Length: 150
Image (cartoon, rainbow, N blue to C red):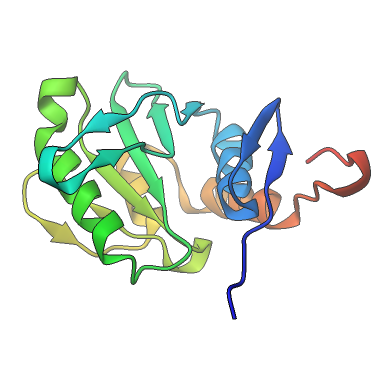
């Protein structure tokens, strides 16, 4: 059986999945500037890669963010790691890997895989746990049906 994600419109963007749209709500709740599928990259033998988000934090740091509903997407993760290693050339800090809110991970830019919960990463950017949890609540509560606004 092939189960497909539900395309979702939020702020004029057509996201490939509800999970991606919820991450946009999450970023908005934290006041983080984001661009969705802004630019793709040719990774040579790995093929083309289009990061889900590019975010800009209040301190000016810019990150790629890849949302994976399935952390078993080996090729997608290999592409994210490759882009993470090349990100300095693109004037980005690195690639954060996001999944479900309770299980969000990122790859740090220097030390390889560093599996920490997303809120620890957000704390690194000055976002406290309560603020993070409020953003998670807003993202989880977002409804996109029937013209409802998150």
